[in-house]
Image: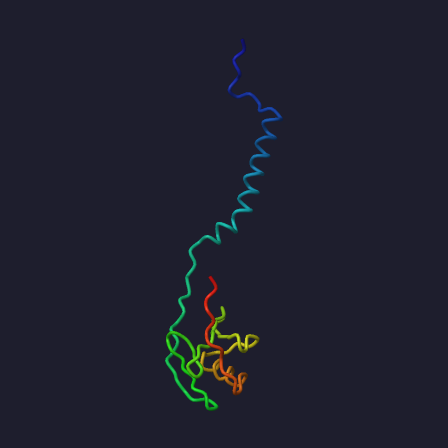
Length: 123
């Protein structure tokens, strides 16, 4: 029986297998890099509390409180956009710098119509 020489040349098959394995590992690393970068903890944005303001605008009572915005005591659904501006279902194609500006624009849009009372939550 022959003892294999420790320094024998690798076969073509062994070289190709090594090259293929290295290519697969490099491709996998390249594909996973964006995913792994995205998993880094991000700084979370905590919404700033709304500044308390009340005013009468065009005969309507607007209240901006920590809990939300209301017109004549009825809640106006307000959403915060990623850029920090505000929008609502009344004028959802425009954004406003402050909730008070948003409420004034909603009053302009509503005219004499009242906001609907809050609908029950979907379950």
